[in-house]
Image (tube, rainbow, N blue to C red; front, side):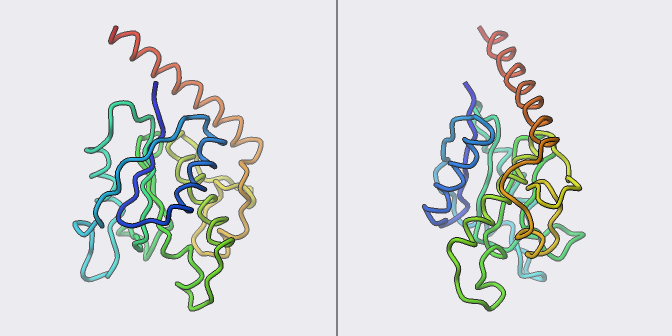
Length: 191
């Protein structure tokens, strides 16, 4: 049996982790487990940019990947970047095992606005679905209300819905079925 793992990087709000667990289970059908909370990813801090390299964090996750992990989603409060972009909400390996989302820019406080818990949780769900969708082979969707649509700013995140469009949902079902079959073949080979 394989699982989807949540991997908090440093202190992450329990309610945020619970909402992610619920949405991942409902959309991907895997039982969710949580890796013990890791320390803050200081090894990934870029002094010049004052941000954290998501690529370095993903590399660490691959090394720590439990053998029964179908996928791992890391969650951090830290602001993330990749070299070619000034920031990202998250990153994932396409058809890979690991993904990460950052809560930093999903919070209203980041933009100098009052805290809004419900808006934060809605944004978290959308970005968790987006990054995990990439791990199951989904690419950016042209339908703006699909969680798989590209978001380069917070307004685009807010435009998304929290349900995959019909096309992405069909592809996801197909890809998850292939993943289950691969896992079953591996388990049979080990017997």
